[in-house]
Length: 366
Ligand SMILES: [Ca+2]
Image (cartoon, rainbow, N blue to C red; front, side, top):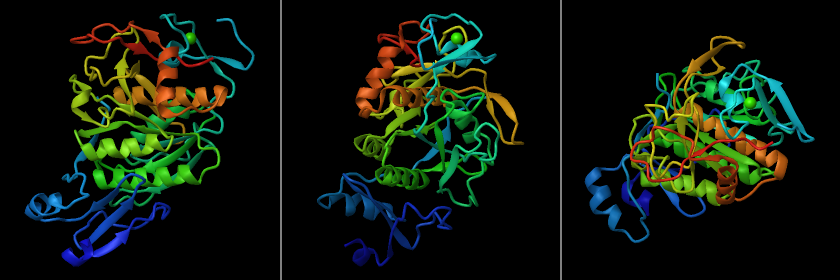
């Protein structure tokens, strides 16, 4: 129908065409993505035609102008199978305990996220970095003018380091899958996100273990289409961990933070206060450290830097889910959210604006 009425070439997206030199320009084609519950079409539509003709066709769920995303970075008694590592990193030291008690150790399950795949949907990953060794692969490159999966901006590598870096990571044996959607300037467009999500869902379906987590440390203006993409992931059993955003506003006003099936992570600091920049509100599921987080960086294979943001908080939760899966096995995403919340510590976070809801601070299983 579309090809007839638009006289444009129909191009079905191939999620496994890694590093494809496909342009995000859709001027002369309709790019088609098949998801389980809907089909997404990207096209350079005339706005009048889109709103007055297409929107009235039966079966058209929604029409949106693609939005651009921004990164959410602002400037015990030991059981068997538990590892206790000395650490100077306050964030790792903090998340192994309920009440604040800095003991200089990070205690975590020895299985440490083994055989769990964490898809880092971000600006790429410096895959040769010492923190990742043989645990990182390139999933795909989905941004325009991105030659390969390398992180030219410095965000994705830091996020991946917090999820699964050998030194800086929560889940030190988890696999990292680099899904590059952000370019050298840190810009992420909605078409790249759609391509990335489509790839992850297909990779998950083809995987026998199906232990999959996506970390999305970015946000865009509220988009119903973004909510649908997140639902498509969670309906397939993929855990979606997202940053709450750094504008000190209600997280329900942006996506993917507002997506009900995502685990939305806000930011706390070393003294369990909400970071001054963190978004908050009923769409926040959990808090995790995100102020002055040391992790891997991009100038060399041993480089590191400190960054702040809910972008840094979300990967702590992605890592905690990987730990949970490697100890107890996988759960459907909504049950996993409940399991992570029940491990966490209630109502410790100070300085949350207009707070009528309970808050939860991440604690990893061990
Ligand atoms: Ca500790």
